[in-house]
Image 1 (cartoon, rainbow, N blue to C red):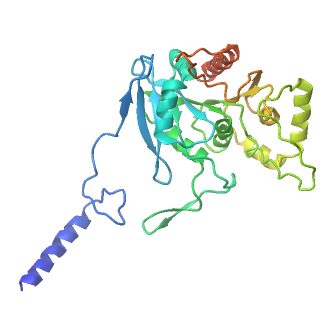
Image 2: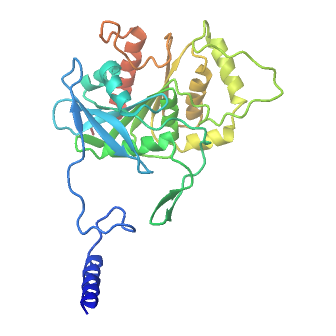
Image 3: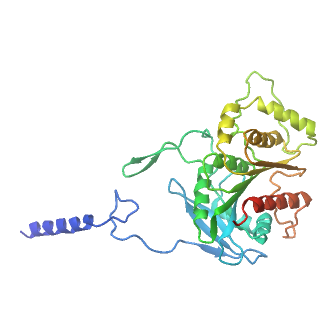
Length: 339
């Protein structure tokens, strides 16, 4: 009799519990009558030589893992126009954010001085999964099952969405600056997502986005060019662009570009071995009737838009760096001015 009463009592408890709204994020496997409360974890660190500290935050991505960002804002409550910065390939996590915030943020300091909030971000490293394969999700045992792993540009979209929701950010005035692979990601994002107001693609390594065709296996091998060529005249650049046009799937490339609905400033580098890719991305945007701007700079180093401290620990940009940063801020000022 005692066991019967016990079982009846347990049944009543279970029935009452499941009659309540389940507040769990994992309701197929866990019942919670109340959600877990508490503020989001944010670590705040001072930044060398700056009045603007960095907020180290963590953004949940599509598949439930987290990516770190470093968020900084000017003085005041905002909401501020905000620019997120993407440096080449991903990886290295929170340590990367902390190192680049302290030693590689000369460009971000200029944006802060111009009244913009800024974000260094990390995303997963680039993988060999073909860009353009559809990402779908279905329910599996009460949780998500994806058709493939998310890609780094999809991480970036989640990060931008997180940034847009911050109370000190003007969600309608969020921009992007990306260099190399970070520049290519801007094109990928802009073809699928409408949450960015404007973007700068500096030296965008966009051959994947432009649907470059496989090399002819019967073609004679060619020697790879150094990253910075000794000479790359305007005539050489124009010829390289024409040659590249013949090596892309132009129909697929234009389909992607026609989906873009935001202005993009493409910053080239005169003697970069990949200059033809930078220029062709710009030219195809113009041919598609999109809002695009172009300028090219004769700098010795790939990634020059991001100013780093010198051996004395000082930000001392050269004339080309000063020019590309000033041009980028002027571009955002035109497209992200307060209404």
